[in-house]
Length: 555
Ligand SMILES: Cc1cc2nc3c(=O)[nH]c(=O)nc-3n(C[C@H](O)[C@H](O)[C@H](O)COP(=O)(O)OP(=O)(O)OC[C@H]3O[C@@H](n4cnc5c(N)ncnc54)[C@H](O)[C@@H]3O)c2cc1C
Figure (tube, helix red, strand yellow):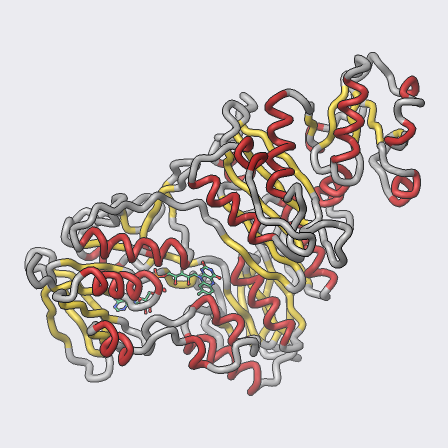
């Protein structure tokens, strides 16, 4: 292949990885990165922790510099250089040097767009007032830090309870600010199911974060006591010293649109599996593109660093003549929230229902479990709440969500890989995972999730879910110990501890549907196995009383 000129718009996750890979594949290519900002290849994911002083030095956010790209890779990085137009017919781009104000053209053989996504800033009264920030760049984080110290800020309002909102909450708490989170939906972390988000909400409340759920901001004013007043739809007002808007991002598609490239329905640049746009000399990667969900087939914008990096690499491979393709996304994510970690991969039950995929055919099923992160006999074990969704027709794993203090992300990573490999719950059952008591259990939570789900498919366990509960029709059998029962139980439940059950089974009606529950679902499963063999119509309630409390918001 002769000398090729590859121009890349955007020099962070997707753009930088594309450039470096292209150089590894071709020593002869001319590679130029344009970025309108002051930095190339910086760690946007580290910005909340820079604000929270966990990452102490700004220079630690820089993974590479233009000099490093020049010296190590012979890649020309042009900062403060905004690409303003694509001339597809002439295979060239217009670039504006933001320092000199001068514009010029550069020709390409291949053009890669990795312009990212911009934080959404809603237009509403007062939204341009000083002290209202969004977070995308190093200068944004510098401004937030400066504002906090200049004004000796003591209060913050975070608008949006997604992962950037949560990371900012944690970091502002660390700086000693009191924080209010305003979220339009009835839960924070809206990509998770509500019962899986509840422990996170409880953790926030425990740390004195004010949660305003089902609430929207309608405007801002200069404050009286504090610097700003935030007006909420309900009529409530919050006085604060700063506001962080973290209500989502919008793909940067202006260049692509103006050039007549196809844009998908979700608003991202349309690309094929080879990351090629509707013009076969132009590729697009990262937050700006529309991608396909591997499970639902639904096309959408999924702004995550991992996919952006991989897509950049794939685009470089394809440009250099290799056969490469992007497999699609699962949205695998993790977030740390004070002492908790929440992670998920694949679509939530809520998403499946919204897409009409979780229908009455009963194709999709879920199991809940709350095992320890490592063997209970070794000190320091703490529970992980895990929800696994699978296809009951063939056992294929659809998605998983988990919350706990430790070991959460490793379980979700294993399941994420299993989903990519189209594995089934039977594969999880048999997975051989590393074990020593301080790290896991001989039956790891992954194995347990697989076993419970496989039991359901094989018919070894009849499973019930709390949302199906009809107290009029169902005999609720609580098989926990009386001391646990006393602390809280489902209304009308009868307590027969598992150890007494065989002896006292005549107290359970034979002619009525029975649901057994315990704290996490294990003893109730044993109860269901035993009583079903005596002819009882019995189901075990998934996730037990712990999941009941998470659903009801009982802490
Ligand atoms: C605060 C924060 C925390 C995050 N945390 C995580 C995390 O923990 N995990 C995770 O997976 N993801 C996280 N992300 C998301 C992740 O950073 C993005 O998914 C990823 O950076 C996307 O890469 P990209 O190359 O598409 O775009 P970006 O990284 O946004 O880079 C785009 C670059 O293109 C430049 N540009 C745009 N238009 C032009 C133009 N016309 N001319 C020249 N330059 C242009 C922009 O200035 C920008 O520098 C976080 C994002 C933020 C903002």
